[in-house]
Length: 383
Ligand SMILES: *Cc1c(COP(=O)(O)O)cnc(C)c1O
Image (cartoon, rainbow, N blue to C red; front, side):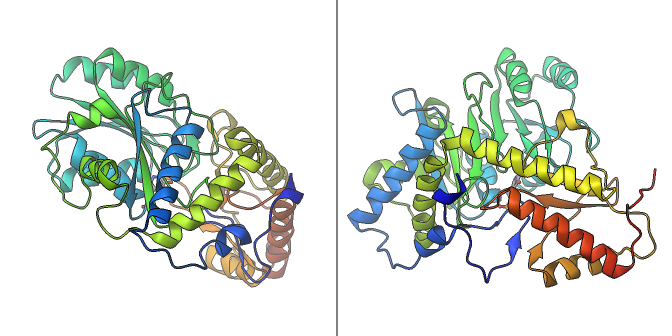
């Protein structure tokens, strides 16, 4: 598999992060062009990207689905769904166990959209029963929103089970699959999804610049007149694509060129299944290496995704995250600070143009950095 793919250029540090992430040199090279955003050649690329995204998701226009691209980072795509898709009388039930669920609540608050919260601690998926009882008792709820891989910890939440409950009560179901789409197969019909959002710089391995939202066309059409925002109007954006194949406002042209190449490379790798298996190999190599150094991961294996892993910081007076981070950076490797509120952790992503060999390199660099810092190996953890 590896020989088919171009590696990142040797000068770049390797990004063991949840995105932006390490991209192939061919994805980077695809950006060395100026594209006229209203020229037919560019519109054809945009059309191909939209239809290819539908194809890899197992969806089609004939089946009633659309893929709407939205300028900005992933958050803009999530916010566009709420700004556009929730009626003035709407209310959203949010399942949250991390920073991205909490961000949804913040968006709803800013948009003055009422919300109901089903919250669990960061190591546990929000309860399916709690969702059911809130939907049974609160008739004002119109939407259910969940995060698939909560990147805060790397936990995988049961989106199919939530979707079943949402469907039973006739609610519109919104899934943030930002850090999982492209790497973990998702059956949209099985999960009863109405809207699903992801972005260019996660598991498709493109560069930042836009989000993409899969929508059931009739569900989106029914939102006519609701959008609270001009730029984040998803239906307006779809109508723009329908009309002339163009973004309504300046598109991230270079990011789209890179993304076209990233989609080609995804297909060369065997599509979502092929990528899933590489990420699983990366994750297995990382975990066994880290365990060998004494580290333990924050989550139980049953709920751990193969995307990103939170490790507990060692209990050793010689360990400080800042110092550890700098030593790894000096060795050409970038990891990610913890975002948890409950435990002292740091995170390592294994998505992007990385292979088991790079995970091995990282583990060796971690060992060398700890030894240099005077941390005793194997490390120990607070209980
Ligand atoms: C990355 C990510 C987002 C979006 O973050 P941006 O910084 O706006 O791209 C949203 N949800 C999840 C789960 C993510 O991993």
